[in-house]
Length: 357
Image (tube, rainbow, N blue to C red):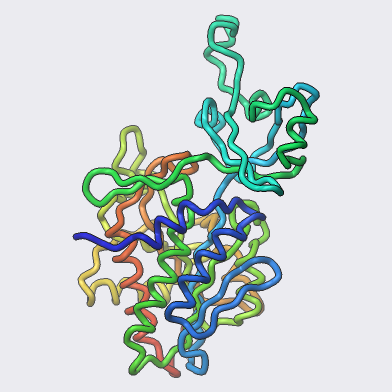
């Protein structure tokens, strides 16, 4: 099925590492403003869009808009930049990559360098690279040349990879995790706005910030506090298990094109899970189930403990090659997830209560 994913591509290509999500947030809010009357941003950078603000119950739909990246920690006399990780990287995928540095005067292109294989001692060749052993080369002759380019310590950077289309309906991007979550919650809101007749609930989509570094809940916790929702749905990615050497006994069986993954346990409220599963069955939306006996390591962990507690559902999209420059998902999975969430919200009314009995 052909889908219009022009907005998705703009969103994925906008640079927005954790703590520096401004560009991606602007793209998201611009799109939201095309159909939602109430679009705003808070002091942390979380972006909000609401449909039917006077409705009840209040629903929060959260997907984090930040991506992993790198940050300049030192510029040496020879003009090489040293970096630390924003979020969790496997340093092996960084070697040889091109990067886009978000300098104060504009974007600067650099390449990640490492000692050449011919110069590495044989007993060192099999050892994994570490980020602190890598550097970024922007072509400057010295530190002054780097400064002249408008680069300072603390500047963030992302891998210079735009979204690409693969065979079938698959796409690859450096920012799948979790720019697609921010995309899905906004698409869910779009579906609700397109047919608002009979909608009882008030739904707010939130593109949250700093999930990749927000070990205490990041922007999800502060935005949930502000909204004070009666129920929340978080959209993130999970590991697809349709690639070699994946242990399905630990992760379950989740395939690209197999639909959304519904989480059970931990931060995922069981009654919200059951409601999501029932809606998926009624709507004919394919899905799989994932056990989350401990932390989900998503925005759900922060949201479900906000104020006096928020009944929270976690809906994930299967993702190949997570935290790499080329994460891969199925476009149809994104739209199945959006349709599921919109249908869930439509079934809520003023009598909805997720309190266990």
